[in-house]
Image (cartoon, rainbow, N blue to C red; front, side, top):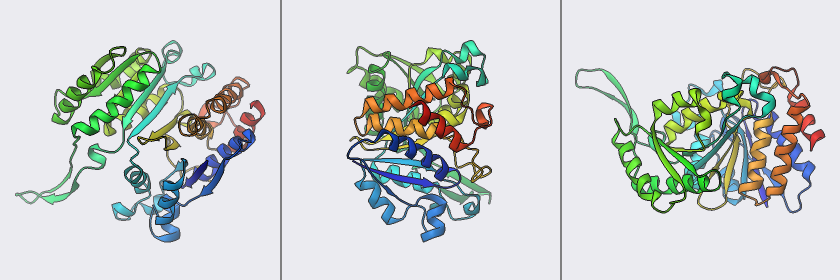
Length: 347
């Protein structure tokens, strides 16, 4: 079983290193690792955020453990050379279309949420976000209007096969949890969303055991703050999912706690924390590695079929928090390495 390690930029190398320590402690037979350059680090080394060698490694690997990309030094580059293109390129080349972002409050962190404790404590949801379409991959550019004004455009579109594929992923996820699926769109305004809703309803006929509901994205954003406990699984498009999953992260207390998996139609997946590269604290040992550690647990469960080992990691994180482990984003003073030590001690 080959795991590709793409640490990337900013705090990426620091947090991936701690996740690797936890994986090594499990001493799982048959696992090997190879490292690859991505993002700004890759551009500075070889002139491209997703070098051919890295892409070839990604295609060979059973799973990818990813840190973060983003480097202020690269902000002035042409868009196709910016660090973030590494993620978009991997999604496209590997067919990674289904992003799973769980949001669940650890009891010890309920006070860290911006929400009232009794509201935050009820959060236990999964966002299933389509990641291979929408405005991120549609036609985009700049043009001049008839009256000489500069105009930017990004085309949002989905075809029915793309919607059907992610809808099945959402229903299957709901079936494996509490049997409730909320499809989030903006069908009252967008034709793309009307197609989305129509196709999701068609797919629902295959899942009579799953309760389907629909919600406009603006209302969903409000409900995540007002009553997040009502949600089990949310399925939505690329743009809406990007926004709602970050909102959910703050509802549970810190963006440094949320893991994610982005899967293709096989078992291959890219696993990463949902936060960014945090260049302002890179190299200072302040980053919270727990989202990356929990992403490694998701990797074991979904791509490598090692659920028992994944359970061990998640239980160790819970015990570390129960024992008082807190990095700066959680109101504590522990360093990145100290947080890793706390998880290893609890493993």
